Length: 239
Image (tube, rainbow, N blue to C red; front, side, top):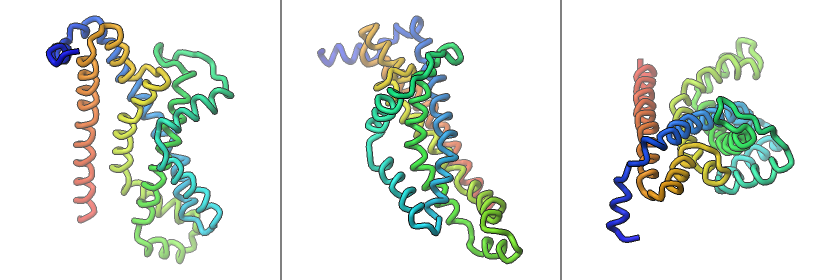
């Protein structure tokens, strides 16, 4: 393909009237998949963070090993193991959620993304917990609160406040990471829609350009909103 043909294909958006539904459903699928993965990752991430802070050497080792493995191996490898390994044994019904989300592919994708995200969110939680002043823990214990009550009533509420911007940023990251599910599994998210349109219409560049613009329109405002939230919270801390 000559440079002239590539340039022509880059600005050929004649497919949009007919295939816009691929991108609309792709955006919906991407957002649902990403949000579900981050929400599903929160509980195991909190458990991993508490294990990392535990006095038990065994619990610290297990949590540390999990985090190291998932942070040190490619997402593509993890997704392949979960989809072709774990869910080749666990048979899921082929049920359509909202009319366009196939549960048999959606659940493996969410599980793989959540397992990966949990390793990162766990470190976010741990940093948030460690950022809480130790004096507050000591004051709570001196008032007769148990270690569990201190963590639940004093430490965690403040830690959650500290990590909210970073947790929101993890959602933005997950929106980008979810594109790998369409490539490997055929999940009908945004990248799958762009690839399908490009294959069907033989217009190679423009569908991917549309996908890139959509990703930018989602992630850039979200990033700016997170930055504004961080600045607002810093002003609140100063007061």
